[in-house]
Amino acid sequence: MEGRDAGRVYLALLPVRLWPGKIREPHLIFVAREHCERIKERFSEVPDLVVKVTSPGTRRAARGEKKRE
Image (tube, rainbow, N blue to C red):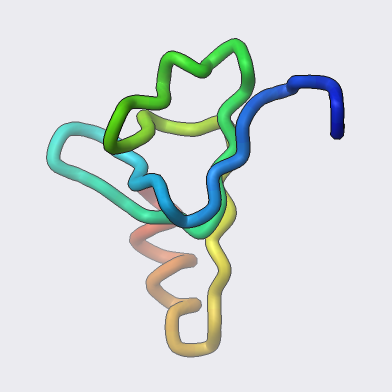
């Protein structure tokens, strides 16, 4: 989608607020252009796409608690 201005991609620099008091830091998030108001100064509200890179040591938590959130 290069050059189509579909939205913004953020790499592991922007915490995501799932609800008040619950913050997660995914490795990559995408926020569609029509939802750009979700990006705040210090965090993002729920993005359109979240990418979490897992390893054998983090896979259980990522597929359990974090996936439910």
